[in-house]
Image (cartoon, rainbow over all chains, first blue to last red; front, side):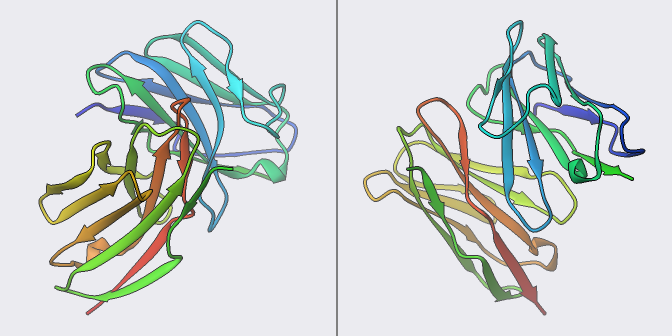
Length: 116
Length: 109
């Protein structure tokens, strides 16, 4: 099946620094990538949708200047948390759709971000 | 508005069968997903239904009734490793996933 690679799996950073999370589709071209955030004991929340070569579409309440998403190629999307603060600490997960199984979403392994 | 309902928590016994129900209301409909998620991990794909009926895949089966806005996930021959959260998600007309809050399944020996 299709594979999505996400890294880093865990990152600890100081408040005010920026963190970049990468999401790669390894064996298919991801026409669409989604970025989700999960708070403890809550369901996944969609942050933004990105289509290759175009600007990401952010969900209501998500600051696009804080969560920068780049989907420059059909196999790579990045999420940069700029000037991270402790309240940004969360589990971030990417997913990708494309290839022959276009309706299925394939998920990365997630990134646990802890901001001190 | 768009809404997904599923029970918060269920308990079942090892070796038994459990059915997790999900009802949905979405703007348009392009299919329903079931995902399994263990604590601290990303959800993994279990099933996708877009037509009415039952889809069987090993110990797991998923059912969909589009007219009723209803789906269920059936798990047979439960194993301890099946203890996890099970997420129901519907794909709306914009191909966005509308997620349920998840059902925490507890398996007892």
